[in-house]
Length: 238
Image (tube, rainbow, N blue to C red; front, side, top):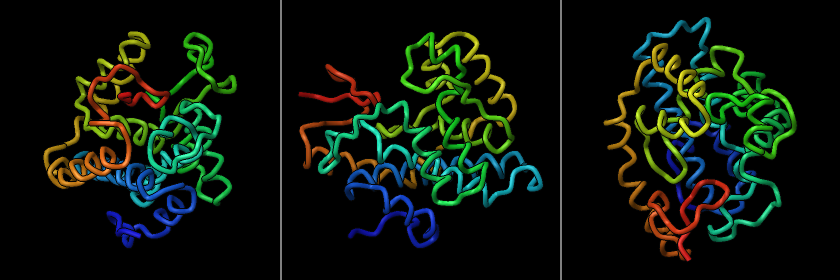
């Protein structure tokens, strides 16, 4: 098996990813994406000099590293080599991730950060209005750590692609002005991360991963517009 970014530094979290990943390719994508979100979180943590009594840095980093663990057991990435279909829509990766993390014995903030990180939180009204395939209920961050992780998770997608504040705000627009306003409040609270150094750190990985996907599948650059989007919002070419 190849050596993955920070797998020795964050061995506990890496081993959970490794346990649920069906292939090295999906492990590489989700684990590296989660490390990028952890770097965003560390950058904003330091930039804002957050109170460690409110935002325990160890919990913040662990929540960032594990927030997308449910992707491994949901659909949306079946085009990747050796990735099976689970008959479970991508939107449920938050709920599935929370169930995995609870089963694995992680803390409440880590579990709930996975459960509520979609968008800027989903309400029962959102589920009905947009026809989301989730059990009825509210999936909204309720603690500072959960709010922080939800915010940090917006700045990189598993396309994979970095996102600016403007990109994120535009994407949220299709879900209503109130979602944009909720995001604006998070921007006012935490500010924008300094992405240049993080982009440089992962630039070679982005290029290498795109090459590996193109070599192993019929998919080109995952973040470019294509004729069809799968349930994970990835452009898939025929």
